[in-house]
Image 1 (tube, rainbow, N blue to C red):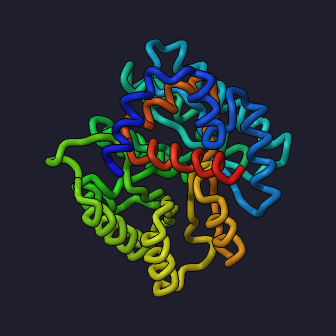
Image 2 (cartoon, rainbow, N blue to C red):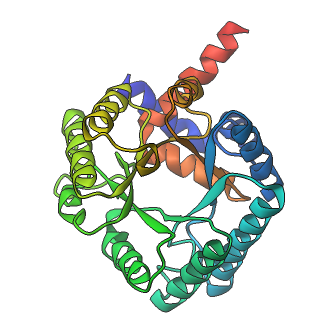
Length: 299
């Protein structure tokens, strides 16, 4: 099936944008904040919470970075107006990390301060391994300055992740999506799974709040075991899933009493986001294609 996945990815540049938009519409709220609000309202009605991401990673100047930060401020204000149960997730490259560290820090801190004033939380996403040190440094800097409404992400497939855990207070743990060298990341599927479980156990053992981000049924089962054995209170962990991926399983987790947060991306950069994500992880392309084919066949 891996050959089919890679074949799908190679065909992506030839696929018309409307088709890509149709394929990705289930996984992206839409181009506007109104779209994100509509999706979050629907999720809240089903007992789920959300974290909203403004798409736009490869910005080229400071004005673009400030504009994306401004969209986060707008989103936070709308959450209050609409009384939505939602937080935000930010990518530091969108806030200027590759342009100027001070610019990125300024944009990030402004969003964190705004969120804190509204009683809301900011998750700093993790990107490829070239950004890991700077991302963790900024997270620790802001936490050290007293900003407790900020968390970070760790990727289980990176070989360094277990060493990065000590002292991190609030962590989303996921497998990881970016293509990395074998020296940097585990390539074996079972090794990534094993690292995920080991890292989750280490986070729980040190008392971190853990956001368990996975659609892998094996890892969901292992996470439920870890949570149960540690007797974690419901306010010490949550599960997280991507918009449009395994919603039925998400419903089951909510029905069982677990907090479930859905990652809701939106923005005008939907095409670049969709193609990049599919190219970075051919397996996702296969999932999407088979999912769409299944819908067509059922109809």
